[in-house]
Image 1 (spheres, rainbow, N blue to C red):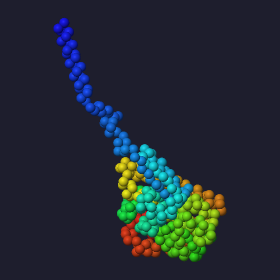
Image 2 (tube, rainbow, N blue to C red):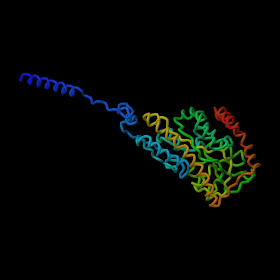
Image 3 (cartoon, rainbow, N blue to C red):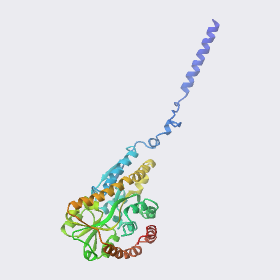
Image 4 (cartoon, helix red, strand yellow):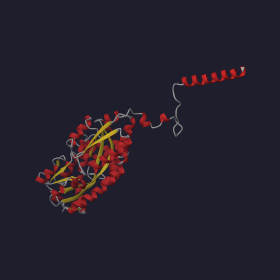
Length: 358
């Protein structure tokens, strides 16, 4: 009997110890993830956020062209990478104003992203319009490869001073000129009023050829061509096709080719204000879409030329003599640019040395 009582007391004591031990442990044991680390350390993006969402208003002046396609690709990639924490709102077709107005909004932070040709930076950051110097690049592909590599760093400081981060450069297409009248020799260009984007170097280009360069934004362009305020316009074929400018101009001159490049920009303060994982999502998305964006631009350019031909547009491939005359007439543009734009000579020399141009 005494033995049974003794055993019972021992059992009761053991149960009490176990109960006290369990109650004294205030935190549950850490679960272990698939890689052997505590589960709380996995899913790092989730641990970095309180669930707050961020909005990126992303604008451009064009519609149904390579730039709007880039916007759509970026939206899909960035939102996916952020697990929906970043919401990208798209504003194509100059919904928020002209290129100049949207650029001002970008620097002020009222929009957070913008894509436009580098030429529209002419009145804002003329150094960037080195990209638009005629006959400087062998082709648009080599230009974008240069800018998306070490070459892009040459422009970082000037953009940074204005609160802009260049996230990526995309192909728009070879530069061409759509005209109301047939142009097959230098004399045919004399006096022609040809619209260009805002870069002074493009005005210089047309003037050097004997024409009159007219800087003009996208919204007023269709009416100006239709009413004869201008005789033609310079850009890529896909721009002419998407805007239906071929309805008023039926001759497509395949010069100066080279490169029309779109620059994808973000407001630097906004970008830096994002949590680190969202900054990474934005930057990675811009890079990730490059190949698909460039393939679309190439296909869209060729398709646009074929579609315009069906609408009665005549494609003019200049003869060797005409082409060389255009090249020679363009050479003084570089020295003029270098004298006007501080810091440009070194960058131009690097491009010329790499590609053996001009």
